[in-house]
Image (cartoon, rainbow, N blue to C red):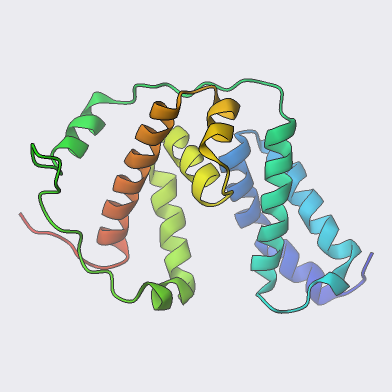
Length: 191
């Protein structure tokens, strides 16, 4: 193992964020801590593998992503996601659309997506928006978009139907869009 004190400090500083991310996916604090620990040990045991082509945080998060996927695949427990979430949420989503399925209002302009993604604060706001989602909805969104799991793999892991998965993903995307419109892009609508 390396004895680089700077690396140790940087890894320790990012631990809370990594644990929160792992917990969102694994829904178990002990499993989340273990996955983060495994990722950090992997970095400390072979620091020479970090080539500096990305930030240390991105590198460690990439390792953690695979530790989480391994954990999800190894899990033999079935986890249920209710197919019916709060009816008021359905009503709020329905209010965004016309009878013909088109949106009532065009999505607000978000500017240059590449430049936005480069801004570190964006990810802090995105994390807050994810935390505002129902836990089950946030989890399936992160499994699909961050862990890049296929829908059939997610359905098998969560013991849900494909249509249920797509409904939950749709709800997640709508809520994240609303949250980012309000909290990042500054497009507050007045009524």
